[in-house]
Length: 303
Ligand code: TA6
Image (tube, rainbow, N blue to C red; front, side, top):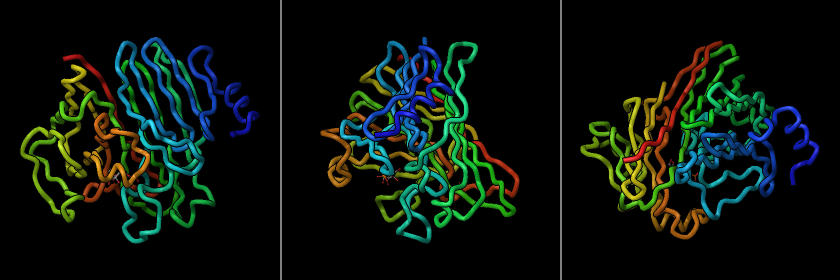
């Protein structure tokens, strides 16, 4: 159970009356946000958004019914931050998949209410001794999250070191869908993708994507926008990105869900990952003293 003193200090320093308070779920501290536009929950571990529910809407972000909230263990669902490498580490297979920041405790450095009533919270992860063996670089990471009629995330990498660094990254978003058989992804047509289920072969997308089996694809050189059409819930989720050239599409379906063990009963039927990032050919080189900002904005509209 997190230290009650830490909780009290967080609420004193960063709580917003009636809009943002910190509390614990399982072994983790969460920021609970409620404003006139939406509700959201964000874990300090991984600065991981776990839910976003615009007023009068179905949840947009999916969280597994079997998710666990254990320090140091990544949470199944929400928006995990994959950084500074996506997937398996290129050289060290024993390094944690998707990097180490999703299991690290981030600091809250700012909270505020914006003019139109949105709630903004900023998290930071500075270089730490415990991560040095995995990532011997003087970098700092900041995630700005704005909760309102849209959900906006800005992931900023600052290279405070004397040498350039190369990263791959993703905002590994799990979207909630009414029924996986009634969705389509549009905007990735004609893009090349790496098929992680077929020997990492490179192929080209020819049509809007519908899902009827396990899928795990890394689309390269993608456009700044795509959308998730959910005819079951009669809505479109618009995904607008900045400084992102890769999009990952993932659903574990049945067998992989069983192997993962925390997807929940039939969870794969109600989630779809569409991840905004820079991966493989689109990895990012950041010069000494420079910074890079990966941004995404989710906007829901009825159809
Ligand atoms: O983003 C897709 C992916 O890389 C899949 O290969 C799958 O492993 C998924 O991420 C989940 O990874 P995790 O480490 O959270 O189990």
